[in-house]
Length: 374
Image (cartoon, rainbow, N blue to C red; front, side, top):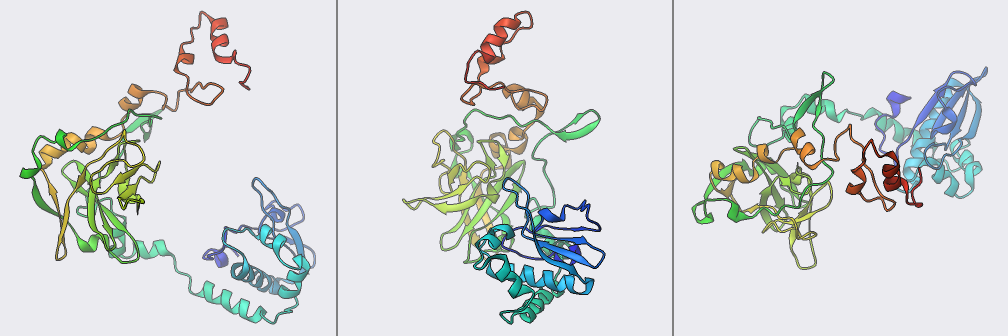
């Protein structure tokens, strides 16, 4: 059953369990479908789920011969796929189903609507046409290009410092907060009038379409840049790093426009919206990034940029990547540290000033407020 249903695109996730005896260690009665063996065959359960609102599965059919189990599940799952609303689990689907589970039994077990043969055929088509998308990528060098860090080089650049703890490598701690940063063009010593057009990517690297925005990251010296194609608007480029959390992720951001027509990229982490034309943060004026001109000539994409030696000191990866020293500087991000917060949930730096020689004072400062619950 796991092999059979691994490829299903269903309205919501589906879980199954199969238990060989009534002890049902597989917890079949809390799954979207479950089987429990009997001395005559299998009991089939449907519509169960765990989670915040658990639902006990319903006994749908008793003592089903092994030869009929898969057919019943095929019909049930395909009918669910065809009729459930998006993001609806099987338990809610059955609850809202007109006629309830008895009506569903008539359709699935007794073929009251005469559609069981169609449901079985559709499931066979889904199972028979299954292909692993990741295997296809592993075996196709062209598809592998979609997962390169940069489209203009095979080089890779670490986004965060790796440190060693207890003999094991791990990423450095990520501070919870940074000072706001506005990166201005005048920080680049070379004036824009002396910048040059530099061919860094191909149009085909972005795979532009009229259906939606496409994007890619490129490497230029030690600097990471993001290029965007917006249908009917053209090409845009910005730095790759979002200054809010200093993550190199902007090429993965969602592109949109506001009521004034300003086109922006929304950082995928915390939704800071940066203009693609001037880099201003439309949702927080304390932040700003660098934006660059792009032109397309044939299949070539060129950006108007200063020399890497001028740009790297401003937005180079080595300057902005997260390091252990960063966490130690800004604090409160380490895995071995404990945050102390007040009753409103906000960080209270004054509560850290606890001295071992003054335990009563420390308690009064940290837990004297009656709103706190321990």
